[in-house]
Image 1 (cartoon, rainbow, N blue to C red):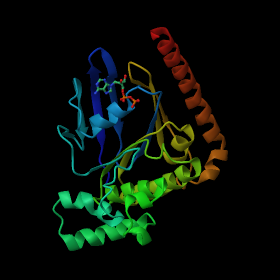
Image 2: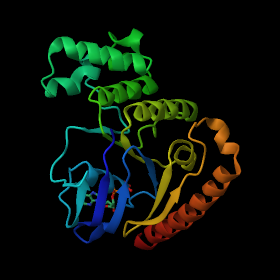
Image 3: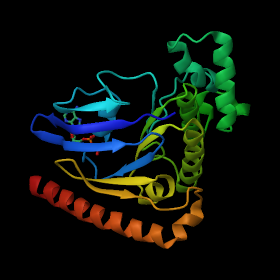
Length: 260
Ligand code: ADP
């Protein structure tokens, strides 16, 4: 079951850069939230904080009411690059997180085989990462995360390097799988379409100092497929998010220009 994540007055400063400014928000158990915003607005910083990787300057983070002070085993992280071990097979990569948890070999194999089946890679368990397409590598990374039955999944542009069709297919697969384990998901993306298609809530962040400037529910049917993009609500939301992002991107470009 997914956890409740609460950020209370959280601030993160790097030198003079305010990466995240006094942010208060909560992520409900089992919810799927996407975060969009211009480069450098603090999206990765926010994920690192929720992962327990950053020592924050201000405020606190609670997971199911408990103060977060270190990374949790039940949190799964998916990066843009699959970060697989090249000398291990797909099956061994899928089982990797279980080794660190000292799960016995037979059980590791069984769980890894099961998650590979769920991501459609059963026939590729004996392959090595370099023999796979980018989409299949990312599927393996998803399998590795799912093998630990996470209650919180943090994804940092996981499909950013893939072509659009693969991206949409993998997005729906991920959605199905995290719903199956009822994990809470926080998903960073540059794609407004991906945000509308997959999530039940969209947060838009502003360029420095990083702040949440829109917190909008995605009021679309729970059963998602590409046809939801044709609905009026999807068009309205896309326009609203795009309007904010365009202003933010223009401001960020103007600042870069001024700094040159
Ligand atoms: P995003 O993920 O939205 O692109 P980040 O969270 O990576 O943004 O970064 C937010 C801001 O904090 C940026 O200005 C970035 O340069 C700065 N920053 C991030 N990490 C560090 C760090 N370890 N040291 C110094 N500055 C950092």
